[in-house]
Length: 177
Image (cartoon, rainbow, N blue to C red; front, side):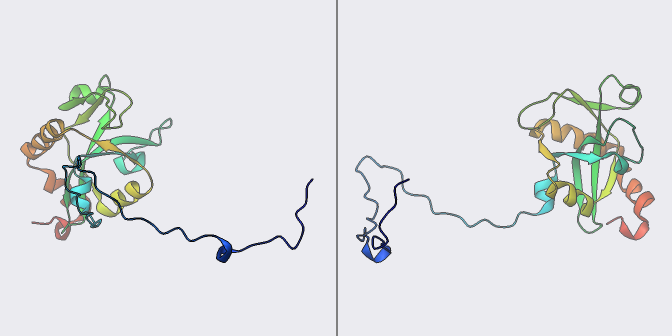
């Protein structure tokens, strides 16, 4: 292996200084440069509503020996109560999907689903803290398109008892009025 003589060494002072030239705009650049906007924190309500997550099966209040999680879409976030209203996703051919009103959602790159999923029009409350843990733990799959999300939200709102579901799980003082 070749070896450099020990007297051959250098440091940054030996390197020629290369000044950074300012960017020269071409006459063909008709577009003004857009100012860089700072990244502002986004409200959990804005970010979560309409998003699809992998929710641990225990948070759906049942166990399944062959599943650790199920898809769920966040329908509403009640920040004053600290509760997120979710809609559980199931197989469209399951008994649950046959006896409950559902909205069928096809898999897309945007929503992150791997197969056609039936989202129940049944409110399922979980704490916003649990939703944040799922979000920060990489359980976020994607977002529903606006029309599908609106259909699910209208269906749950039409039931009118999602606040009752919050009261049942978290008590009267938690259901933000």
